[in-house]
Image 1 (cartoon, rainbow, N blue to C red):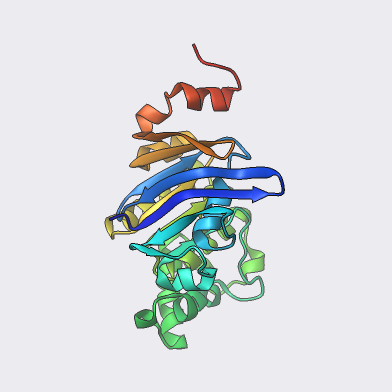
Image 2 (cartoon, rainbow, N blue to C red):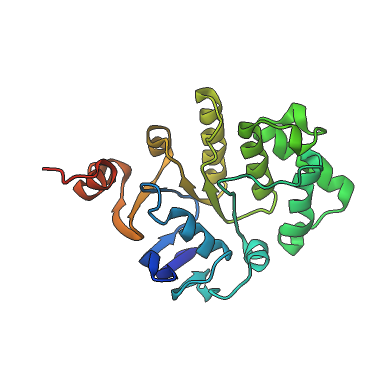
Length: 244
């Protein structure tokens, strides 16, 4: 049984279908790369899985249970969390306080901590994502790349079993990108299922166990990275013309 399943997911906005009959599953300890041109439906799929949107049709199942109508906070406590294209921390709180909130209020009940312990654990998570020297800084003082690292730390603090990561490499140097991808692969060894949206395909594909390609709201290819990126349908979607 898959950890999480999207079954026939469709989402319409007026007469436009942003996502059309998408079915896929996520297994523990795997990294899935979700690729596709701008407007292909990647963020809409994240919103449906994390609960920010309800589908027009289809269902979401979590550990075999239907959760299609669950609110985002309930999914978070169950083990599904995500980052956003535009990082959304509490700008006037310190980095440690931002991460501690996830530990105190977003993690499963058995993970609940008192504030001093949460702040201490938050420092460890921030160190893991390369922000050890910034723990006492206000979030509003961070660069784009640092904000992305902070939001990743905030999501990890909730102890997700499925982590949806939206363009976390934005604002990172090549070295910084490798550090973050190394951290995500370590999370995979701990059993976390990770779905990554990222435009830097050459950086992403070496760490992916599976690639799912979307175009115009539909899955056009799925499988091993080396096979998907050579798929005529994927090449056509990116290049805009049929591939001989």
